[in-house]
Amino acid sequence: MRLATWNVNSVKARLPRLLDWLAGTAPDVVCLQETKCPDGAFPVAEVGELGYEVASHSDGRWNGVAVLSRVGLTDVAVGLPDEPGFPRPEARAIAATCAGVRIWSVYVPNGRATDDPHYAYKLAWLAALRDAVRPAVAAGGPVAVCGDFNVAPTDDDVWDPALFVTSTHVTPAERAALAALRDLGLSDVVPTPMKGPHPYTYWDYRAGMFHQNKGMRIDLVYASAALARAVRSAYVDREARKGKGPSDHAPIVVDADLPFAEPTGPTEER
Image (cartoon, rainbow, N blue to C red; front, side, top):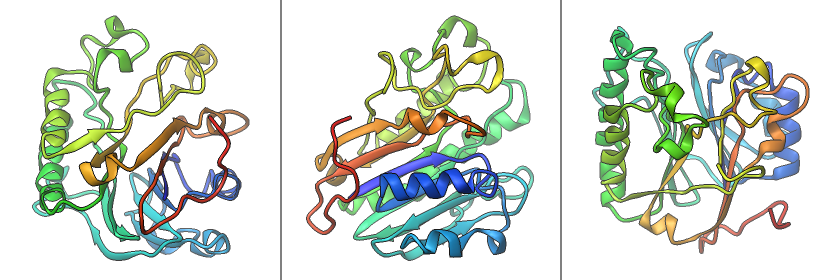
């Protein structure tokens, strides 16, 4: 199985790029974040021409998550049980079963600032995600929790830790929330970077940050033991961040040797 996750920063704005990338990379399952379009406006027909079914959860202009699959899409669940809101629950989580793998696409709240109410909301949301994922991980089957977590797990995951000391995304509480999620029995599938020693997945649009490789690793793939031991490769597709009108995030692509789904698409070394 080839599994990918990508914060596309508006699926309609990036649609030509998304379709080209799907055709060239040929993932079996794709988790998307920040789709930013109502469910009824999601380009189902366009991605369907490439063989993908779609499960989407969006409330319009902001947020939005989706799972695209060409290996089956069942047991779809939107949101989280007892999900906190700001003030109402937002479109930040969707789960589906694809070829026997339980997959979540998540877009964790940003947090804004440590003294902002959105920061407390972020921590509460991560706690709710942990509670939602726990039963599937405990069942022992293959599970993947993928998406934009808006947290850099370690100082190595930000280009200059000193600049982030007073910011969100790197605080002990946020990192502890990620550790609590991993403690369920999930492993961080760290991808191979295409440039430099750090597998950054996000670069701010401003000041040439991408070209200077001043980025952050905030897009993550967390895998249960059954999935993690099947992973044979993972990489950040930095090429997808180049060119005209890209998202500010790059996709992560994971290939896993699972008995019920053969890897498809390009097989060259990366």
